[in-house]
Amino acid sequence: MSEFYRRSVLVLSVGILGFAVWQVLVPFWSALAWAIVLAVLLAPLQDRLLVKFGNRPALAATTLTLLTPLVVFLPLLLLGASFVEQGRSLVQELQHSPWRIDGTSRDRIEDYPLVGPVIAYLTETLDVDTAEINGFLITIGQTLLHYTANLGSQLVLGALNTTLAFMLMLFLLFFMLRDGRTMQQRFANLLPMEVARRDELFTLIADTTRAVVYGSGLTALFQGALTGIGFALTGLPSPVVFGVLAALFSVLPAGGTAFVWLPAALALAVMDRSSAALFMLGWGAFISVADNFLRPLLVSTHAHVSTPAVFIGVIGGAAAFGGVGLIIGPVLLTLVSALLRFLEESQRRHPH
Image 1: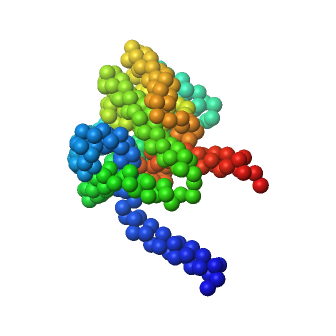
Image 2 (image 1 turned 90 degrees about the vertical axis):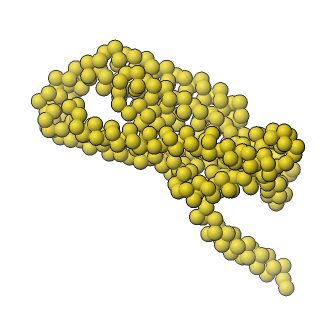
Image 3 (image 1 turned 60 degrees about the vertical axis):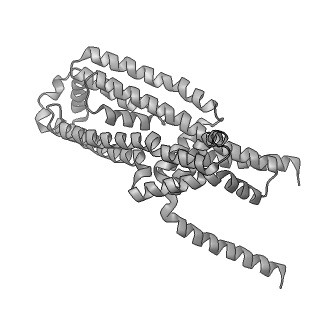
């Protein structure tokens, strides 16, 4: 039997088995991905509990698994429910509000302090009917609102699609915490890399995961919470909805939360609430400026992750993998960058 034949059979067998295993894991992908991410985040706590519990990994993993729903997912579930409820109320309020943009506003919209002159200029310059502008604006507004409401619900409740998926994630999390170190070591032994490189690679993955969660995640929560507080203080409706939207927009490198608080300030000015508009303008400027200090501070304490990797990874990861992609995307891009760097350094040491 030739060497080529043996290798061909081996490669074909590995390919078939790999495809079969992938098909088996596809229904559990979301739960497995969340379990791995949470296991990486909770690994330091697992190590501390191992010391306190006399090196009993099962007891430490059980404790963290039981605490996870109370500390992490219960607040997210409550936030998601409040988001959906306030989103529905907001849509209904816009449909019945005297400030809605419809055919009846044609005679009065040009009297609004800020938007009136703009609408009048567009109407005269472009020879466009006011009703057409109004219809265009209301269509965009309602479409954007419905889309962001659905997107926000998916991101907040992505790990809780069904009760079965949630329970499966907790089940997998227990084994990831209990046997994670062993599984990592066995997988590392299969990599055709130097021991130092393997350790550096796994450390980078863990540090990047924590950097994305604690850096981008906590920054988004902070900015979203401040935006919601600003809406509540100025009496604007649905502060939870716009707080969640501000948290989502905060990942954008340009504009960010300004896409939420700036229209709110303009709306307050249109409603002739000058003091509230000025407050929202200053409050929003503080929120946006805080991002420049808070995010680098939180990220740098765990790992050096480039801004493009975070931005592209978050957007692309969410589109490809759903809610968990917000974390997986930047980690994958950082991992690829590290592997390319290792390859470049290897070629420098061993030139052909």
